[in-house]
Length: 165
Image (cartoon, rainbow, N blue to C red):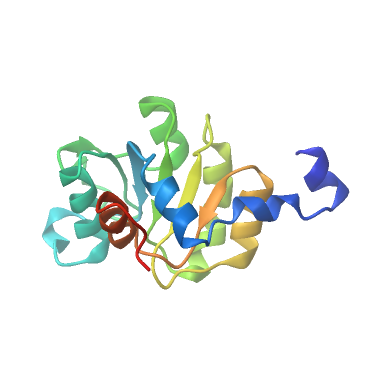
């Protein structure tokens, strides 16, 4: 834990990214994204699949981390991992973990997210997902956090040369 986090100051808040320009800048740096809670091709109409499909089509390496589908071994042509830590161990540093989980389920993933070595540079909570305790824990651990935004929307806007606003 950093000295700032241990001393109780608020410097960790700088890791919460909510400014449109900063979000756009961050998105442009993503080359490898783990998708926690990804759906399979059989659920192609679900955001937890088509956002990942979009990212892959945009040239981003997608690392599938489904929370269901125990018999599935491959999604979008990539091997699946059962934990973010296993994905990071096999695939190396993750630029981002894009989270498709209910807000009430996010905290349960903290041990896995924080155990990943190396830790992901960013954790992205999709549209409609906020979990302040998890956001703070990740930010205090030095992970950048974006909440309640669609990565596909933000990536499209950033690729077009701006932010979504």
